[in-house]
Image 1: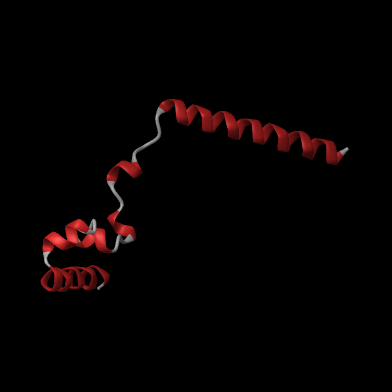
Image 2: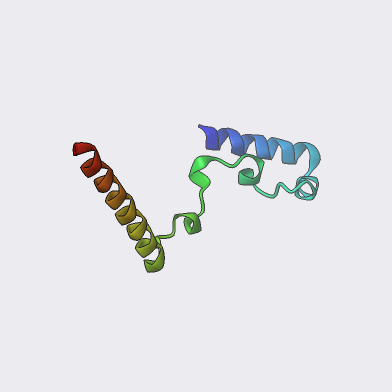
Length: 76
């Protein structure tokens, strides 16, 4: 429904002021008028590189080690 409303609004605006005027305002398509959450580009969902995975694993390992040390200290 949101996509249809955006599409309709864009073409009504284009009919009123003209496509060239919309482009001057930086609106060249309905998605420029109102970006919606499902318009996310694929590049934003790229998988992590191996270096990023290694960094995350190292960070989680350090956190787990710290938590384990705290638990052991509290159990004494």
